[in-house]
Length: 234
Image 1: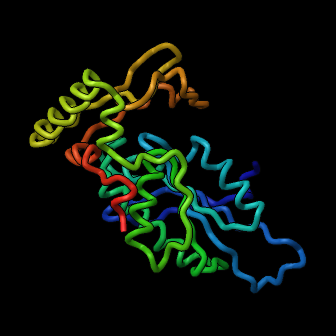
Image 2: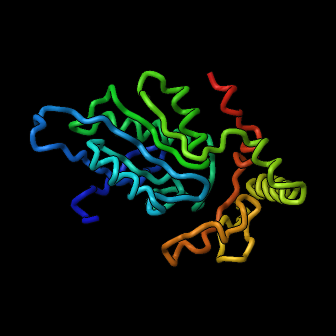
């Protein structure tokens, strides 16, 4: 994909800015220039950044006539915020709304036809965001979503669940002195480095600098087991 297929953009979210790629829709030659395109906002899951596959989805949607915005959450990738790689579900939900604010200002976008595309943890977040943003969100793609924090924790088994809870509590306590607790979310084949994911041999990260990302827990990590199942959303 050539660099001319998308633009590097930024939009504000809270006190930080989110880095994003904007893919203007490809319109058929017979389409009037005044015709506005539908739009899709794409976000990743736990520990993910836009470089991990969102460009390929965006390019396919772009070719089908959609304007796409693939973004990094605050504290991740090209976005600002410290500590780095901080997972805060409340703030990530705010990032989705901030992305919606930005998409509403993009020239050539039909603001009455905006959809969200989330994968993994992002798949759960887009369901919640759509529930809160009924006026602005017209469709949702929720790919392999995390829709029940309790269910996800129970699937990990008692040992991993205890380890995860211990790390989250330790981080909550450590945060009072300005610190964070890190845990790896991915590793090399045949290494098990995370209490949050299946064995990392199932995960392929194409960029060498992403083989060992680390994830700081935050107090909001304790809210993951309390995230509501999908059927509880209005």
